[in-house]
Length: 275
Image (cartoon, one colour):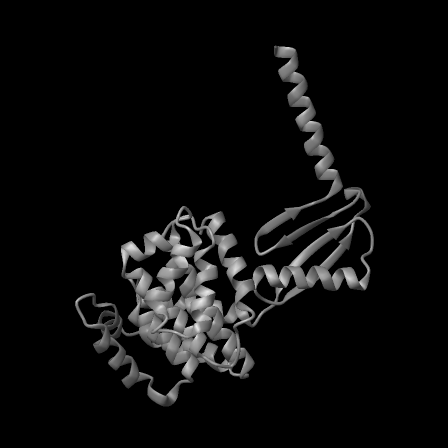
């Protein structure tokens, strides 16, 4: 996932926090929207094009989805469509991931997150160990309704509604992907929701409790989940802070700024001497 799409996903997760709750409908609404956009090249192109005016995007979203999903979902999709994506298909990918994120939030709020994780893993294992089942669920010539009927026969009322929604999405909207791979991705996203991100923070001096809480809140909003802080004091950075989180490094230290300034001055001096 390219940088602009990663940033869009992080921003969308932060925006989604106001819509998450114990109701699964928001998650399934996002799946409906993702599937519809995936199936229409024209719709996907317009909504992911940064040159399309916001008013035109919003009007299109209203026209296509207002009768299919909730007003909250329509409102949220407008916010997502306003973000920048590296490729048009990334809009679909992000909406689907947000649907999984919302489903995990529902499971967490209703205290069934561990159950959903276990059920997804069990179904994944069943698919991975049965070649006939793999073929039946991944067969491109088979009707989606037939595949979902098979899933209902296998899972039925034995699994939680959140698990069923995630399995149905993985099977019904595989988009040429192997079902086992999609299920594995969904299972990892659900598992990750239950774990706090860890941010390693380096500062030049001790932070006040209020500063720590503000930093934690800001990072949680940016990454769309709870964040634990490991704080280390290192006077050599002179000021500011360095944050390592989710494979990224955010370097706002004074020492790095000074080093960058020094390099810029050296380059400028070399340029003048050559001229």
